[in-house]
Length: 500
Image (cartoon, rainbow, N blue to C red; front, side):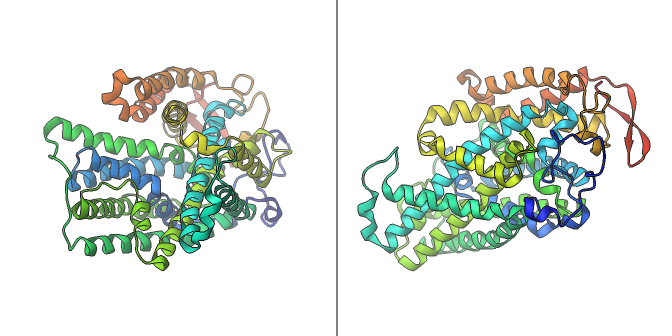
Protein backbone atom coordinates (compact mmCIF):
# COMPACT_ATOMS: atom_id res chain seq x y z
CA UNK A 1 0.00 0.00 0.00
CA UNK A 2 1.22 3.44 -0.89
CA UNK A 3 1.01 5.38 2.33
CA UNK A 4 0.08 8.82 0.99
CA UNK A 5 -3.51 9.64 0.23
CA UNK A 6 -3.65 9.78 -3.61
CA UNK A 7 -2.28 6.29 -4.02
CA UNK A 8 -4.02 4.57 -1.16
CA UNK A 9 -7.18 4.13 -3.16
CA UNK A 10 -5.31 1.83 -5.53
CA UNK A 11 -5.04 -0.76 -2.77
CA UNK A 12 -8.18 -1.76 -0.89
CA UNK A 13 -8.06 -1.56 2.88
CA UNK A 14 -8.82 -4.98 4.32
CA UNK A 15 -10.40 -3.46 7.45
CA UNK A 16 -12.32 -0.60 5.82
CA UNK A 17 -15.68 -2.38 5.59
CA UNK A 18 -15.78 -3.55 9.21
CA UNK A 19 -18.42 -1.71 11.26
CA UNK A 20 -16.35 -1.80 14.48
CA UNK A 21 -13.67 0.56 13.13
CA UNK A 22 -13.48 3.92 14.87
CA UNK A 23 -12.62 7.04 12.80
CA UNK A 24 -10.62 8.19 15.83
CA UNK A 25 -8.30 5.20 15.37
CA UNK A 26 -8.32 4.44 11.66
CA UNK A 27 -7.51 6.00 8.33
CA UNK A 28 -5.99 4.69 5.10
CA UNK A 29 -2.42 5.46 6.21
CA UNK A 30 -2.77 3.66 9.55
CA UNK A 31 -4.54 0.64 8.05
CA UNK A 32 -2.71 -2.68 7.57
CA UNK A 33 -0.58 -2.91 4.44
CA UNK A 34 -2.16 -5.39 2.00
CA UNK A 35 -0.12 -8.02 0.16
CA UNK A 36 0.05 -6.06 -3.10
CA UNK A 37 1.64 -3.09 -1.33
CA UNK A 38 4.51 -5.05 0.25
CA UNK A 39 7.43 -3.98 -1.92
CA UNK A 40 10.23 -3.65 0.64
CA UNK A 41 12.24 -6.71 -0.27
CA UNK A 42 15.64 -7.75 1.11
CA UNK A 43 17.54 -5.25 -1.06
CA UNK A 44 15.31 -2.33 0.01
CA UNK A 45 15.96 -3.16 3.66
CA UNK A 46 19.69 -3.63 3.01
CA UNK A 47 19.84 -0.21 1.30
CA UNK A 48 17.93 1.32 4.21
CA UNK A 49 20.59 0.14 6.66
CA UNK A 50 23.48 0.99 4.35
CA UNK A 51 22.41 4.62 4.43
CA UNK A 52 21.87 4.63 8.16
CA UNK A 53 25.08 2.83 9.10
CA UNK A 54 27.36 5.02 6.97
CA UNK A 55 26.07 8.38 8.19
CA UNK A 56 28.34 11.08 9.57
CA UNK A 57 27.12 10.79 13.17
CA UNK A 58 27.92 7.06 13.29
CA UNK A 59 31.44 7.65 12.01
CA UNK A 60 31.95 10.26 14.73
CA UNK A 61 30.78 7.71 17.31
CA UNK A 62 33.11 4.98 16.02
CA UNK A 63 36.06 7.37 15.86
CA UNK A 64 35.27 8.25 19.46
CA UNK A 65 35.97 4.60 20.39
CA UNK A 66 39.37 4.98 18.74
CA UNK A 67 40.05 8.11 20.78
CA UNK A 68 39.05 6.30 24.01
CA UNK A 69 41.97 3.93 23.57
CA UNK A 70 40.47 0.94 21.75
CA UNK A 71 42.63 -0.49 18.98
CA UNK A 72 41.57 -1.65 15.54
CA UNK A 73 40.56 -5.22 16.43
CA UNK A 74 38.86 -4.05 19.61
CA UNK A 75 36.70 -1.58 17.68
CA UNK A 76 35.78 -4.32 15.21
CA UNK A 77 34.79 -6.64 18.06
CA UNK A 78 32.86 -3.90 19.89
CA UNK A 79 30.83 -2.98 16.83
CA UNK A 80 30.27 -6.65 15.98
CA UNK A 81 28.74 -7.16 19.44
CA UNK A 82 26.56 -4.10 18.93
CA UNK A 83 25.61 -5.21 15.40
CA UNK A 84 24.55 -8.64 16.65
CA UNK A 85 22.34 -7.11 19.34
CA UNK A 86 20.79 -4.67 16.86
CA UNK A 87 20.21 -7.48 14.35
CA UNK A 88 18.37 -9.65 16.88
CA UNK A 89 16.25 -6.79 18.27
CA UNK A 90 15.47 -5.46 14.80
CA UNK A 91 14.27 -8.89 13.66
CA UNK A 92 11.87 -9.14 16.60
CA UNK A 93 10.43 -5.72 15.80
CA UNK A 94 10.41 -6.36 12.05
CA UNK A 95 8.64 -9.72 12.23
CA UNK A 96 5.92 -8.08 14.31
CA UNK A 97 5.43 -5.34 11.73
CA UNK A 98 5.49 -7.78 8.82
CA UNK A 99 2.86 -10.04 10.35
CA UNK A 100 0.42 -7.33 11.47
CA UNK A 101 1.10 -4.91 8.61
CA UNK A 102 0.53 -1.88 10.88
CA UNK A 103 2.77 1.10 11.76
CA UNK A 104 4.35 1.70 15.16
CA UNK A 105 1.57 3.85 16.73
CA UNK A 106 -0.92 1.05 15.97
CA UNK A 107 1.47 -1.71 17.12
CA UNK A 108 1.78 0.12 20.45
CA UNK A 109 -1.97 -0.31 20.98
CA UNK A 110 -1.45 -4.04 21.53
CA UNK A 111 0.35 -3.55 24.84
CA UNK A 112 -0.52 0.02 25.89
CA UNK A 113 -4.15 0.12 24.72
CA UNK A 114 -5.90 1.93 21.90
CA UNK A 115 -5.43 5.31 23.62
CA UNK A 116 -2.49 4.53 25.90
CA UNK A 117 -0.42 3.92 22.76
CA UNK A 118 -0.09 7.69 22.42
CA UNK A 119 2.54 7.59 25.21
CA UNK A 120 5.23 5.54 23.40
CA UNK A 121 4.29 7.08 20.06
CA UNK A 122 4.69 10.67 21.29
CA UNK A 123 8.02 9.93 23.01
CA UNK A 124 9.31 8.53 19.71
CA UNK A 125 7.89 11.49 17.78
CA UNK A 126 9.44 14.20 19.98
CA UNK A 127 12.89 12.63 19.62
CA UNK A 128 12.42 12.26 15.87
CA UNK A 129 11.26 15.84 15.30
CA UNK A 130 14.24 17.24 17.23
CA UNK A 131 16.72 15.06 15.36
CA UNK A 132 15.03 15.74 12.02
CA UNK A 133 15.79 19.41 12.50
CA UNK A 134 19.34 18.74 13.69
CA UNK A 135 20.15 16.36 10.82
CA UNK A 136 18.69 18.82 8.31
CA UNK A 137 20.99 21.46 9.77
CA UNK A 138 24.02 19.14 9.54
CA UNK A 139 23.18 18.37 5.91
CA UNK A 140 22.92 22.10 5.22
CA UNK A 141 26.44 22.57 6.64
CA UNK A 142 27.76 20.03 4.11
CA UNK A 143 25.88 21.86 1.35
CA UNK A 144 27.45 25.13 2.50
CA UNK A 145 30.93 23.59 2.25
CA UNK A 146 30.11 22.33 -1.24
CA UNK A 147 28.78 25.69 -2.48
CA UNK A 148 31.68 27.75 -1.13
CA UNK A 149 34.14 25.27 -2.67
CA UNK A 150 32.51 25.57 -6.09
CA UNK A 151 31.80 29.33 -5.86
CA UNK A 152 34.08 31.02 -3.27
CA UNK A 153 32.29 34.33 -3.90
CA UNK A 154 29.31 32.95 -1.96
CA UNK A 155 31.36 33.25 1.23
CA UNK A 156 30.26 36.86 1.47
CA UNK A 157 26.74 35.63 2.22
CA UNK A 158 28.04 33.42 5.02
CA UNK A 159 28.47 36.45 7.29
CA UNK A 160 26.10 37.78 9.92
CA UNK A 161 23.39 35.87 11.73
CA UNK A 162 19.61 35.79 11.48
CA UNK A 163 18.18 33.71 14.34
CA UNK A 164 21.52 31.92 14.55
CA UNK A 165 22.19 31.24 10.85
CA UNK A 166 23.85 33.26 8.10
CA UNK A 167 21.95 34.11 4.92
CA UNK A 168 23.77 31.31 3.09
CA UNK A 169 23.11 29.01 6.01
CA UNK A 170 19.38 29.73 5.81
CA UNK A 171 19.34 29.18 2.05
CA UNK A 172 21.08 25.81 2.45
CA UNK A 173 18.86 24.74 5.35
CA UNK A 174 15.62 25.61 3.57
CA UNK A 175 16.82 23.89 0.38
CA UNK A 176 17.56 20.61 2.18
CA UNK A 177 14.28 20.90 4.10
CA UNK A 178 12.28 21.31 0.87
CA UNK A 179 14.02 18.38 -0.85
CA UNK A 180 12.98 16.11 2.01
CA UNK A 181 9.40 17.33 1.87
CA UNK A 182 9.22 16.62 -1.86
CA UNK A 183 10.41 13.05 -1.31
CA UNK A 184 7.91 12.47 1.50
CA UNK A 185 5.08 14.01 -0.51
CA UNK A 186 5.17 10.93 -2.76
CA UNK A 187 4.87 8.53 0.17
CA UNK A 188 6.68 5.43 1.35
CA UNK A 189 7.25 4.06 -2.14
CA UNK A 190 9.35 7.12 -2.99
CA UNK A 191 11.19 6.70 0.31
CA UNK A 192 12.01 3.11 -0.70
CA UNK A 193 13.30 4.22 -4.09
CA UNK A 194 15.42 7.01 -2.66
CA UNK A 195 16.94 4.71 -0.02
CA UNK A 196 17.72 2.14 -2.73
CA UNK A 197 19.38 4.86 -4.83
CA UNK A 198 21.40 6.36 -1.97
CA UNK A 199 22.73 3.10 -0.44
CA UNK A 200 25.24 2.11 -3.14
CA UNK A 201 26.41 5.73 -3.54
CA UNK A 202 27.55 6.15 0.05
CA UNK A 203 29.04 2.64 0.19
CA UNK A 204 31.13 3.34 -2.93
CA UNK A 205 32.12 6.80 -1.64
CA UNK A 206 33.42 5.70 1.77
CA UNK A 207 35.22 2.72 0.22
CA UNK A 208 37.01 5.00 -2.26
CA UNK A 209 37.79 7.44 0.55
CA UNK A 210 39.37 4.65 2.61
CA UNK A 211 41.45 3.41 -0.34
CA UNK A 212 42.61 6.97 -1.05
CA UNK A 213 43.62 7.51 2.59
CA UNK A 214 45.57 4.24 2.73
CA UNK A 215 47.37 5.22 -0.49
CA UNK A 216 48.07 8.69 0.91
CA UNK A 217 49.55 7.14 4.09
CA UNK A 218 51.75 4.79 1.99
CA UNK A 219 49.98 1.82 3.52
CA UNK A 220 50.93 2.72 7.09
CA UNK A 221 47.92 2.37 9.41
CA UNK A 222 48.03 3.27 13.10
CA UNK A 223 46.04 0.42 14.64
CA UNK A 224 45.95 2.30 17.95
CA UNK A 225 46.70 5.89 18.92
CA UNK A 226 47.81 5.40 22.50
CA UNK A 227 48.85 2.65 24.88
CA UNK A 228 46.30 -0.12 24.26
CA UNK A 229 43.86 -0.86 27.05
CA UNK A 230 44.27 -4.16 28.84
CA UNK A 231 42.26 -6.45 31.08
CA UNK A 232 38.92 -5.56 32.64
CA UNK A 233 38.90 -1.94 31.45
CA UNK A 234 39.47 -3.03 27.85
CA UNK A 235 36.59 -5.52 27.94
CA UNK A 236 34.33 -3.03 29.70
CA UNK A 237 34.93 -0.49 26.92
CA UNK A 238 34.42 -3.12 24.22
CA UNK A 239 31.04 -4.18 25.61
CA UNK A 240 30.13 -0.57 26.41
CA UNK A 241 30.77 0.36 22.79
CA UNK A 242 28.48 -2.46 21.66
CA UNK A 243 25.76 -1.41 24.11
CA UNK A 244 26.00 2.21 23.00
CA UNK A 245 25.67 1.11 19.37
CA UNK A 246 22.45 -0.65 20.37
CA UNK A 247 21.25 2.53 22.11
CA UNK A 248 22.00 4.57 18.98
CA UNK A 249 19.58 2.30 17.11
CA UNK A 250 17.03 2.42 19.94
CA UNK A 251 14.76 4.72 17.93
CA UNK A 252 14.67 2.60 14.77
CA UNK A 253 14.46 -0.66 16.72
CA UNK A 254 11.27 0.69 18.24
CA UNK A 255 9.56 1.75 14.99
CA UNK A 256 11.17 -0.55 12.41
CA UNK A 257 7.67 -1.96 11.90
CA UNK A 258 6.90 1.28 9.98
CA UNK A 259 9.10 -0.19 7.22
CA UNK A 260 8.81 -3.92 7.90
CA UNK A 261 5.03 -3.71 7.47
CA UNK A 262 5.79 -3.28 3.75
CA UNK A 263 8.02 -6.40 3.58
CA UNK A 264 6.63 -9.44 1.72
CA UNK A 265 8.03 -12.06 4.12
CA UNK A 266 10.09 -12.74 7.21
CA UNK A 267 12.87 -14.00 4.97
CA UNK A 268 13.20 -10.62 3.24
CA UNK A 269 13.52 -8.95 6.66
CA UNK A 270 16.03 -11.50 7.90
CA UNK A 271 18.21 -11.27 4.77
CA UNK A 272 17.98 -7.49 4.49
CA UNK A 273 18.84 -7.09 8.15
CA UNK A 274 21.73 -9.57 7.99
CA UNK A 275 23.50 -7.92 5.05
CA UNK A 276 22.49 -4.43 6.15
CA UNK A 277 23.45 -4.73 9.82
CA UNK A 278 26.15 -7.26 10.93
CA UNK A 279 27.89 -7.47 7.55
CA UNK A 280 27.49 -3.80 6.72
CA UNK A 281 28.57 -2.67 10.20
CA UNK A 282 31.76 -4.74 9.95
CA UNK A 283 32.52 -2.98 6.65
CA UNK A 284 31.75 0.33 8.34
CA UNK A 285 34.06 -0.51 11.28
CA UNK A 286 36.87 -1.51 8.92
CA UNK A 287 36.54 1.74 6.97
CA UNK A 288 36.54 3.72 10.24
CA UNK A 289 39.78 2.08 11.35
CA UNK A 290 41.41 2.71 7.95
CA UNK A 291 40.33 6.36 7.80
CA UNK A 292 41.31 7.19 11.37
CA UNK A 293 44.46 5.06 11.40
CA UNK A 294 45.73 6.45 8.08
CA UNK A 295 45.07 10.05 9.11
CA UNK A 296 46.88 9.52 12.41
CA UNK A 297 49.85 7.98 10.60
CA UNK A 298 50.06 11.01 8.32
CA UNK A 299 50.04 13.85 10.87
CA UNK A 300 49.14 12.48 14.32
CA UNK A 301 45.69 14.06 14.10
CA UNK A 302 42.49 12.29 15.16
CA UNK A 303 39.68 13.22 12.78
CA UNK A 304 36.20 13.95 14.13
CA UNK A 305 34.31 12.72 11.04
CA UNK A 306 34.90 11.81 7.37
CA UNK A 307 33.88 15.34 6.36
CA UNK A 308 37.26 16.58 7.63
CA UNK A 309 38.96 14.31 5.09
CA UNK A 310 36.61 15.39 2.32
CA UNK A 311 37.29 19.07 3.05
CA UNK A 312 41.01 18.38 2.70
CA UNK A 313 40.69 16.79 -0.78
CA UNK A 314 42.79 19.01 -3.08
CA UNK A 315 40.70 18.30 -6.19
CA UNK A 316 37.54 20.45 -6.25
CA UNK A 317 35.66 17.99 -8.47
CA UNK A 318 36.31 15.08 -6.09
CA UNK A 319 35.50 17.28 -3.10
CA UNK A 320 32.13 18.10 -4.66
CA UNK A 321 31.41 14.41 -5.33
CA UNK A 322 32.25 13.54 -1.74
CA UNK A 323 30.02 16.31 -0.38
CA UNK A 324 27.16 15.24 -2.65
CA UNK A 325 27.44 11.65 -1.45
CA UNK A 326 27.26 12.66 2.21
CA UNK A 327 24.41 15.04 1.43
CA UNK A 328 22.44 12.23 -0.18
CA UNK A 329 23.03 9.81 2.69
CA UNK A 330 22.24 12.42 5.36
CA UNK A 331 18.90 13.16 3.69
CA UNK A 332 18.23 9.41 3.33
CA UNK A 333 18.97 8.77 7.01
CA UNK A 334 16.94 11.75 8.13
CA UNK A 335 13.88 10.65 6.20
CA UNK A 336 13.96 7.05 7.42
CA UNK A 337 14.90 7.72 11.03
CA UNK A 338 13.31 11.07 11.80
CA UNK A 339 10.50 11.83 9.36
CA UNK A 340 8.44 8.68 8.89
CA UNK A 341 7.92 8.05 12.62
CA UNK A 342 6.43 11.45 13.59
CA UNK A 343 4.32 11.50 10.42
CA UNK A 344 2.59 8.29 11.51
CA UNK A 345 2.37 9.46 15.13
CA UNK A 346 0.70 12.78 14.30
CA UNK A 347 -1.64 11.00 11.89
CA UNK A 348 -2.49 8.65 14.75
CA UNK A 349 -3.45 11.62 16.95
CA UNK A 350 -6.20 12.74 14.58
CA UNK A 351 -6.79 10.13 11.83
CA UNK A 352 -9.86 11.93 10.47
CA UNK A 353 -7.91 15.14 9.84
CA UNK A 354 -4.28 14.15 9.33
CA UNK A 355 -3.04 11.93 6.54
CA UNK A 356 0.57 10.77 6.41
CA UNK A 357 1.38 13.71 4.10
CA UNK A 358 -0.30 16.39 6.24
CA UNK A 359 1.21 15.02 9.44
CA UNK A 360 4.63 14.98 7.81
CA UNK A 361 4.28 18.64 6.87
CA UNK A 362 3.39 19.53 10.46
CA UNK A 363 6.33 17.61 11.95
CA UNK A 364 8.73 19.16 9.41
CA UNK A 365 7.46 22.63 10.27
CA UNK A 366 7.92 21.99 13.99
CA UNK A 367 11.48 20.88 13.25
CA UNK A 368 12.19 24.36 11.81
CA UNK A 369 10.42 26.30 14.57
CA UNK A 370 12.64 24.77 17.28
CA UNK A 371 15.72 26.31 15.55
CA UNK A 372 17.61 22.99 15.64
CA UNK A 373 21.11 24.52 15.27
CA UNK A 374 20.65 26.00 18.74
CA UNK A 375 19.72 22.56 20.09
CA UNK A 376 22.75 20.99 18.45
CA UNK A 377 25.09 23.61 19.91
CA UNK A 378 23.67 23.19 23.42
CA UNK A 379 25.30 20.35 25.39
CA UNK A 380 22.54 20.62 28.01
CA UNK A 381 19.82 19.95 25.44
CA UNK A 382 21.68 17.11 23.74
CA UNK A 383 22.82 15.37 26.91
CA UNK A 384 19.89 15.89 29.26
CA UNK A 385 16.82 16.38 27.10
CA UNK A 386 17.43 14.17 24.06
CA UNK A 387 19.58 11.60 25.89
CA UNK A 388 17.01 11.50 28.69
CA UNK A 389 14.18 10.86 26.24
CA UNK A 390 16.36 8.30 24.46
CA UNK A 391 16.73 6.38 27.70
CA UNK A 392 12.96 5.88 27.70
CA UNK A 393 13.08 3.88 24.47
CA UNK A 394 14.54 0.77 26.10
CA UNK A 395 11.65 0.29 28.56
CA UNK A 396 9.11 0.86 25.78
CA UNK A 397 10.78 -1.74 23.58
CA UNK A 398 10.98 -4.27 26.42
CA UNK A 399 7.29 -3.93 27.28
CA UNK A 400 6.05 -4.08 23.68
CA UNK A 401 8.21 -7.10 22.80
CA UNK A 402 7.39 -8.99 26.01
CA UNK A 403 3.67 -8.47 25.43
CA UNK A 404 3.71 -9.49 21.77
CA UNK A 405 6.16 -12.42 21.82
CA UNK A 406 5.89 -13.86 25.34
CA UNK A 407 2.33 -13.11 26.48
CA UNK A 408 0.42 -13.21 23.20
CA UNK A 409 2.66 -15.66 21.32
CA UNK A 410 2.49 -13.22 18.34
CA UNK A 411 -1.30 -13.60 17.95
CA UNK A 412 -3.08 -10.30 17.41
CA UNK A 413 -6.66 -9.40 16.52
CA UNK A 414 -5.78 -6.65 14.03
CA UNK A 415 -9.33 -5.26 13.42
CA UNK A 416 -9.76 -4.69 17.15
CA UNK A 417 -6.72 -2.41 17.13
CA UNK A 418 -9.05 0.07 15.41
CA UNK A 419 -12.09 -0.49 17.63
CA UNK A 420 -13.31 1.54 20.63
CA UNK A 421 -15.64 -1.24 21.72
CA UNK A 422 -15.32 -1.41 25.55
CA UNK A 423 -15.24 -5.21 25.30
CA UNK A 424 -12.45 -5.13 22.71
CA UNK A 425 -9.17 -6.96 23.26
CA UNK A 426 -7.13 -3.74 23.50
CA UNK A 427 -9.56 -1.42 25.27
CA UNK A 428 -8.28 -2.35 28.75
CA UNK A 429 -9.35 0.48 31.11
CA UNK A 430 -10.78 3.39 29.11
CA UNK A 431 -8.39 2.57 26.31
CA UNK A 432 -5.25 2.45 28.49
CA UNK A 433 -3.45 -0.62 29.81
CA UNK A 434 -2.49 0.41 33.39
CA UNK A 435 -0.12 -2.55 33.73
CA UNK A 436 1.99 -1.35 30.81
CA UNK A 437 2.16 2.15 32.32
CA UNK A 438 3.05 0.75 35.75
CA UNK A 439 5.85 -1.35 34.22
CA UNK A 440 7.14 1.60 32.24
CA UNK A 441 7.50 4.02 35.17
CA UNK A 442 10.15 2.21 37.30
CA UNK A 443 12.05 1.01 34.22
CA UNK A 444 12.10 4.55 32.81
CA UNK A 445 13.28 6.08 36.09
CA UNK A 446 16.12 3.56 36.43
CA UNK A 447 17.15 3.99 32.77
CA UNK A 448 17.25 7.81 33.09
CA UNK A 449 19.22 7.65 36.35
CA UNK A 450 21.78 5.28 34.83
CA UNK A 451 22.07 7.39 31.66
CA UNK A 452 22.35 10.85 33.21
CA UNK A 453 23.64 10.69 36.81
CA UNK A 454 27.49 10.93 36.87
CA UNK A 455 27.75 8.48 39.78
CA UNK A 456 26.60 5.69 37.44
CA UNK A 457 28.99 6.58 34.63
CA UNK A 458 30.56 3.11 34.57
CA UNK A 459 27.23 1.51 33.62
CA UNK A 460 25.61 4.42 31.78
CA UNK A 461 26.40 2.84 28.41
CA UNK A 462 24.12 -0.07 29.33
CA UNK A 463 21.08 2.05 30.31
CA UNK A 464 19.07 1.01 27.23
CA UNK A 465 19.63 -2.67 27.98
CA UNK A 466 18.78 -2.26 31.66
CA UNK A 467 15.65 -0.28 30.79
CA UNK A 468 14.46 -2.87 28.28
CA UNK A 469 15.13 -5.81 30.62
CA UNK A 470 13.48 -4.17 33.65
CA UNK A 471 10.47 -2.99 31.63
CA UNK A 472 9.92 -6.48 30.20
CA UNK A 473 10.44 -8.23 33.56
CA UNK A 474 8.09 -5.97 35.50
CA UNK A 475 5.45 -6.17 32.79
CA UNK A 476 5.58 -9.98 32.73
CA UNK A 477 5.46 -10.06 36.53
CA UNK A 478 2.32 -7.93 36.92
CA UNK A 479 0.45 -9.10 33.80
CA UNK A 480 -2.64 -11.25 34.12
CA UNK A 481 -1.82 -14.62 32.55
CA UNK A 482 -5.39 -15.82 32.29
CA UNK A 483 -6.30 -17.90 29.28
CA UNK A 484 -8.27 -15.72 26.87
CA UNK A 485 -9.73 -16.24 23.46
CA UNK A 486 -9.10 -13.73 20.72
CA UNK A 487 -11.05 -13.76 17.49
CA UNK A 488 -8.47 -13.88 14.68
CA UNK A 489 -9.30 -14.61 11.05
CA UNK A 490 -12.77 -15.82 11.96
CA UNK A 491 -11.77 -18.46 14.49
CA UNK A 492 -11.12 -18.46 18.24
CA UNK A 493 -7.48 -18.96 19.17
CA UNK A 494 -6.35 -19.47 22.75
CA UNK A 495 -3.73 -16.90 23.70
CA UNK A 496 -1.74 -16.59 26.88
CA UNK A 497 -1.23 -13.05 28.08
CA UNK A 498 -4.37 -11.04 28.42
CA UNK A 499 -3.94 -8.02 30.67
CA UNK A 500 -7.67 -7.42 31.18
